[in-house]
Length: 248
Image (cartoon, rainbow, N blue to C red; front, side, top):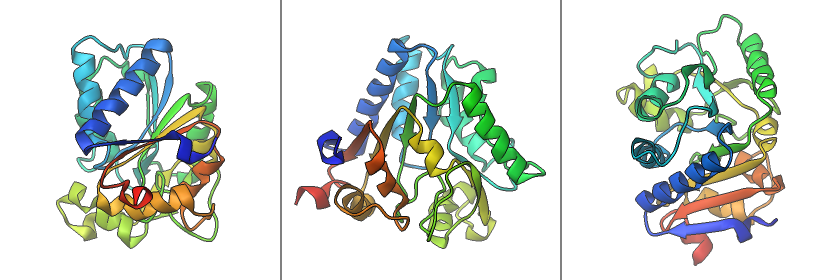
């Protein structure tokens, strides 16, 4: 199915978060033991806020849900205040009734990064694969921490972060760019594309150029998000600002 047929545009970022939360809540109700792939960063914050509100109201039950997050900074322990693991605990896991044993995360402090990447791939396979993955998109077109390059890794791997990506993550580190790790661990594009369904959310004018290239441009490793054009079941949820170049 062409991406153009699966795009929804909403008035603002709050409404995107609300609609996506409702979409995920419906998926959980229909499949209580669903396996979710989850993103981090600023874009999904309103989505997590809305999803947590649904959970508090009793509208969604996370007790049988399994989660796999997309990425983690290399060198950070799960307890590090700037780790994505702590981010997820703060913004989602502390607010829903998820079983901690069903939360899966890459360990950025693992002694052997390659072995940790292999462990994660085996854990995803053991869970039966990811049913629904929620994705953000970086201002340079990255998905997870799959950065633009001459080639993309298919499976979970170690990656060097580009300066633009590190700048985008500086707020997690007190706006100290030097404190942002140079490397990370990330699901590969093949792992992401293996998910049975995917939803990409993008908000704000800074994402408009990448969204335009994702929707209308060629598939290229220079824009990792463009590989979503190959997926059989993708939805794109945008606010007006992020959609401005595809609506003009």
